[in-house]
Image (tube, rainbow, N blue to C red; front, side, top):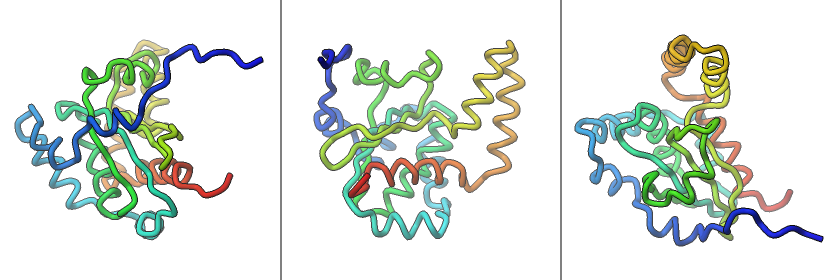
Length: 189
């Protein structure tokens, strides 16, 4: 016999509808200069050809709820990638919410118990949660987890910074986001 859900269901449509589109979210930002920096990064963001082709022909609509705040360095690095992908994909819609706006949503997406952002939650056209991403590519999350495990987060952050420097086009991020878009837009298993 199936068990009742432990957590209450999320009304993803209501959460999405309460969020802000990218341009409005940038204008509402509270950290001087970060909005302009993210917009410059979005404009400069080059998409891999395979990513651009897939986005242009996204087989079904996908919605993303982005939990992000403009003061965060990882938000500044990764939101422009998602925003550029949305610009290239007419069927991709993104809305931004803050951690405090929907705490019952954010608490479900903690990273190793921490309140790390950004978090991108991918939803199908039927508002079904299909996956989430963040606050950084998986190999970098692993570096931070290792740093916490051995008690040297500073060394882990230094390695993460070097990886960011080695991937200025955020190719790793593009590939991981594309994989989630493929799942959320699929027409068959």
